[in-house]
Length: 171
Image (cartoon, rainbow, N blue to C red; front, side, top):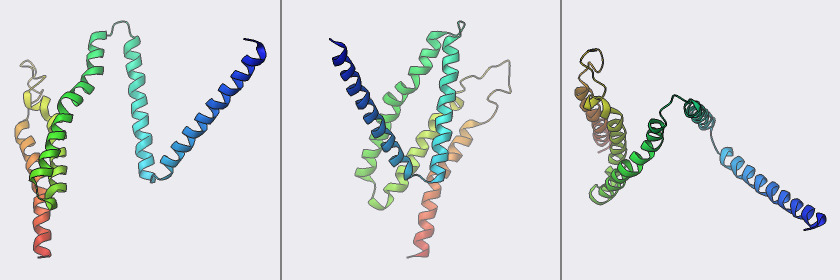
């Protein structure tokens, strides 16, 4: 390949890269342009959190004393739990809600179901006593089942009570 042809190909390649970059910038501006200030703030906070986590993970992976298998388990464990456990539960719950719950109640039941699943995932280590040690009684020293069940009653009870108040107000 002669020098002229190579130079022409480089120009075409650079032009194409600039076109793609400009298109990407325009798409990002269009997406961000419709956001409120709060959404932009949350986007920036989330991006900063992800960047911080990435830097911490990089430090951990570059540390020669870090257990690579443990880091890999944490890195892969989250997506696997989400894909193999959470997504099927959400899909099954969504199908059940759409088939068995009356139309007027679907939004409340869907929100309560999603919130219950999230609370359950966070509460699971506490409810199972994961990390409890007999030599340190201050670890996991509460009745977590009572708090968890109280929170579930609130999650499911608040929409019910609000719906009853609306119905009493506007019969």
